[in-house]
Length: 250
Image (cartoon, rainbow, N blue to C red; front, top):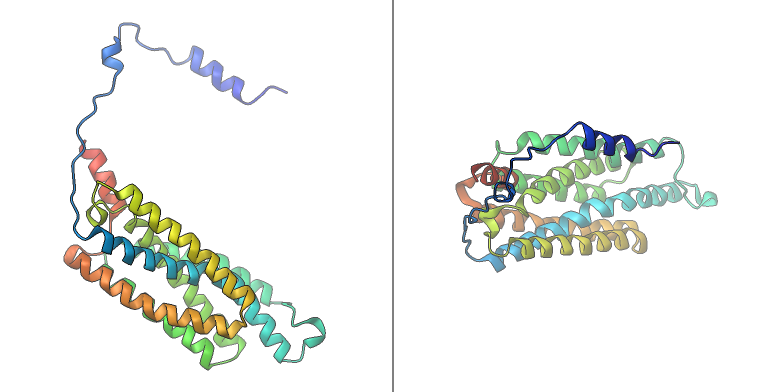
C-alpha cells in the first residue's frame, strides 16, 4: 500500500512553486513590538480565577461518577441489594444523556450568551442555580428530582466552563506580562478540582459528596460575584475575541 504521506509530498514538490527572486530579507517576517497591557491586582485575580476553576471542575467532573453512585444508592434503598444496587435499564440512557447531550447543550447556550449577558449576572445566576440543584438532591429523594437536578447542573457546568476558558486568556484581566504563568496556575488548580471531585464521588457516601459540592457551589457564587465586580462594566469576558482582535490589528 502507498503511504498517505507520499501524495502530499508530491503535491508540495510539483504543484507549489516558490518565487526564485524572493530574497532572504523578504522571507523574514516583520516582528512588531507587542502591545503591553498592564493589569492591577494580578495575584488576587489569579486566586479568584483558580477558585472558580477548582469548584467548576469539582462540579463537572465529579458529577460524571456521582450520578451512577446516586443511582446505585437509590437502587439499593429500593430493594435491589442482591445486585449491589447496580445501575440498570434506562438509567444508562439517563447517564448518557446528562453526560453527553446536556454537556453539549450547555456549551451551545454558553456560546449564545457570550457577549450578550454581563459576567456578573450570568455566572452568579448559574452558580446559584447549581447550588439550588445540589440542595434539592439533599432534600428531595427520587429518580425524577435526581435526573432534573443533575441535568441542570451539567448544563450550568458547561456554560460556566466555557466562560472560564475565555477568562484564562483574557489579556485585560491578567495583563500581557505573565498571562502564561497565571493561566497555567488556573489550569493546574482545575486538575486538582477534577481529582477532588472524582475522589469525592468514589470514596464518600453519595449524599455526603452532594453536601460537600453544595457547600462549594455556594462559595462559587461569591467568587463569581467577586470576579464580575472586578470586570465591572466590561460585560461578559471576551478574552478569545480580544486575542484575535490584537492579532488582526498587528
